[in-house]
Amino acid sequence: MKKETKSVAQNDTESATISPETGFRDAARITLRAALVKMMKNAPETHAGLLRREPKPAEVEALHDMRVGTRRLRAALSVFARIFPKDDYRDIEREVAAITDALAAVRDLDVQRETLAAITADMPPNEAYGVERLRARLARQRDTERESLIKALKKLEKSRFEKRFTQALERATTVGKKEA
Image (cartoon, rainbow, N blue to C red; front, side, top):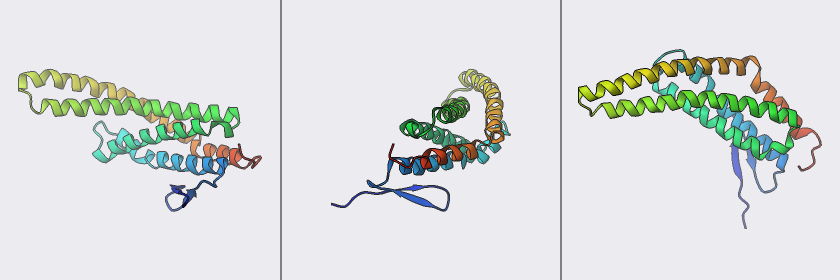
């Protein structure tokens, strides 16, 4: 019987394989590093889209992908929580939760505005007027959430989150190399 393996990207040029023989800590390192890379690779385009009131479609997609990445990272963190010292896990999880929430606030408003735009396309002008007013209100709300997300992304960068996460992951996966 052939054993299944799963290739997981560690960064843009390297991948690692998880197989039934892969230890828990090694699987954690591979999975969490890949999730971090996937999340962070969308940060520059997400940030660029936040600098304008009406982002380009690719920037909206990058924000969506970054949000998905944070949710996947949080899920992986919960699976592998026991490898981390409690303080490291708590700090990392808290930061990922904060950025997830900030991304969600903007993304949800983007989806609402897109949906309303599609609805108004087939409406008579007198009915579309009310929906357009709602879209304008959502745009103002998005501006507020957009500023919050910009601050959250800057905080993530200023705190060197990616480096601290990688260091915590290295500590968690190399200390006491026994199976968790």
